Amino acid sequence: MTLPDEFLWGVSTSAFQIEGAFTEDGRGRSVWDEFSPVVDDDTAEIACDHYHRYADDITLMKDLGVGAYRFSIAWPRVQPTGKGPANSAGLDFYDRLVDGLVEAGIDPVATLYHWDTPQVLEDEGGWLGRDITGRFAEYAALVADRLADRVKLWIPINEPVVVTLSGYAIGEHAPGKSLLFGSLPAAHHLNLAHGLAVEALRANGANAVGTANNHSPAWPATDSPEDRFAAGFYDTIHNWLFADPQLTGAYPEEAAPFLPIVDGDLEKIAAPLDFYGVNYYNPTRLKATTEGEPLPFERIDIDEYPKTSFGWPVVPEGLTEMLTTLKDRYGDRLPPVYITESGCSYPEDLADQARIDYLDSHLSAARAAGVRGYFVWSIMDNFEWDSGYSQRFGLVHVDYKTQERTPRDSYRWYRDVIAGDN
Ligand SMILES: O=C(O)[C@H](O)[C@@H](O)[C@H](O)[C@H](O)CO
Image (cartoon, rainbow, N blue to C red):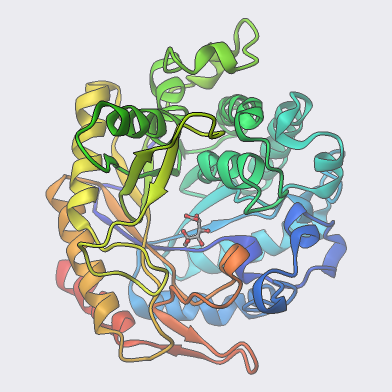
């Protein structure tokens, strides 16, 4: 296993948010196909049409000078029903993409799962059931068998906390279930699937394997014991429910009783990692809710900082706080860290100084904390889940009518930063 020696400059995307081509080459339906259309009747049936325009998009990345590109593989393209032999036409696309990246001198960083669960598996229980964990390991083996000779870094699951909370607890994301604490089995099965996939990837020749966990400092609204309890409760779910078992082999004690753990699961989940990926956007402020409320916490606004178009506070010191907390909590059990996602949505304009300022401050915080690489979310505007095309995170503007790509000022800024570092 080798991690790149040099600092890794990267950009990130995900399959469902950019590829389009829903029905091409045997792709099956996913939970997000079913969950769409979203706001403004937006769907990702075309999105950035990356499935057909990947070569031009690689050229954009090559000209940017990045050393790595984090993308995801669409499970429903590789296994249309989430089980059985691989759909080779589906895998062929990722072969073409990976070959193009290698030719361009860009390290491929592959995420196996970025939320597009095959609908057939969701109909059979999805992440609430245990069966999907074995399916995911089979899928991981099929993909590694084809791509492990060229992919540099592997990430089994993107942000399992968001799948659990937004997909199964409060229903904001696919599959749209509002089960509150009834969503916790999904958290355990996502952890188990992560561990089984780490094993399957390595067994099929994978180089380095890590995570892409979302982390957000949990700030109490006041110093009252109630608000501190609320923030602590949220902190456990958002920051430690996945990191603890993955890095230490044990769940936070207050969560373990609610999880369908079977003997041997924790050992599997704690499969050793070569790197730890952090997705950071902003801190979260919590206040206690009144007696009888379903959840003991409520997320409230953080309004003493500037905000992005998404209403998210711009707090680079929150990234410093999170990286320091991770080091303090895990010590030498924390593998080398990459920022696998960091970015911001702002208006459509090509002149995006606010985005430059955001990235500049977060990059400085990340480098000061000694991370091994930084991946901007995102190389181009794309389908922002339940917010559709209303939020733009791209270094490159996308005209969704013509599919024209136009680099923003931030693209040129990042290119110069990378060139300056090389
Ligand atoms: O972190 C996430 O939620 C996802 O990984 C991305 O798919 C989002 O699009 C991005 O973060 C902006 O919200």
